[in-house]
Length: 71
Figure 1 (spheres, helix red, strand yellow):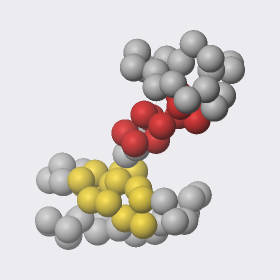
Figure 2 (cartoon, helix red, strand yellow):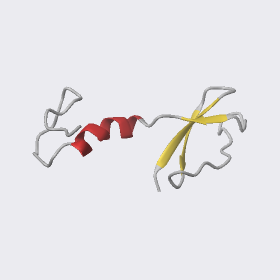
Figure 3 (spheres, helix red, strand yellow):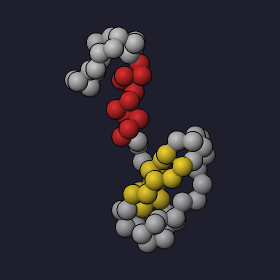
Figure 4 (cartoon, one colour):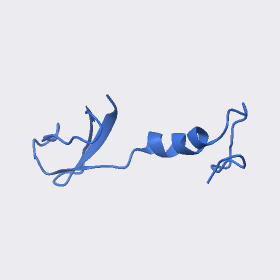
C-alpha cells in the first residue's frame, strides 16, 4: 500500500498514512485530533515520475526533465 500525506486544515500538521490507492478514510490529525484533513500531492511521486517515464538508459537526469522521456 502507498503512503499518503494529509495536511490538517486546523493546525497545518502533516501526517502520513498507509492507504490503498483510490481510497480515502477518515484520518484525524495526530497533533490536534481534527478530522478536517486534505490529501497532499506527494513529493516522492513528483520526483519519481520523470525517471519512471524514461527508458532504462542507466543515466540520472539532474535537470528534472529527462531528454529520453516519452511524451
